[in-house]
Image (cartoon, rainbow, N blue to C red; front, side, top):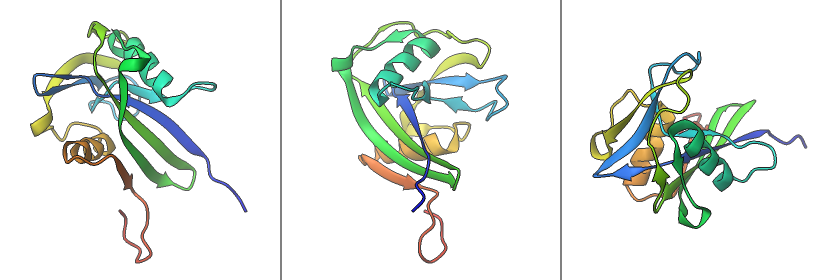
Amino acid sequence: MRGTLHIPCAYTLFRRDGKLLFVLREHTGFMDGKYSLPAGHVEPGESFSQAAMREAMEEVGLAVRPEDLRQVYTQHRYQSDEDIRVDVFFGPASCTGGPRSMEPEPHGDSAWLYAANLPETLMSFQLHALREILAGKTYGELGWIEEKGQKL
């Protein structure tokens, strides 16, 4: 039996006054012009939580202690047989630093956007996950094909 390659990704939800922190993607060639949570791939030898803390510091200059990081949602996402993602979203209880744009080449400015009225200019899979999180869900699947041939 052939296994599948799952690409692990970590995301961090920074909240303030009913808003979430995003960075605007620019100059990457992938979803430029879309807002993204501070996020990235889990690197070799790294856990999901370590990746979330690293990406938060690298992208928006916010330091999170491991004991303050809480997993809030996991999304198993099918894009193709060669591109299956495991997205783990964290919400830190507290943080220090920034926020400020730490990677001006791939990201434009950071922005605080109202969680209750998220714009369609977010990456669609993140928008889906955030709506699930706001509905109180902790796990979801996206893009998988049901037995009836419909996508979830």
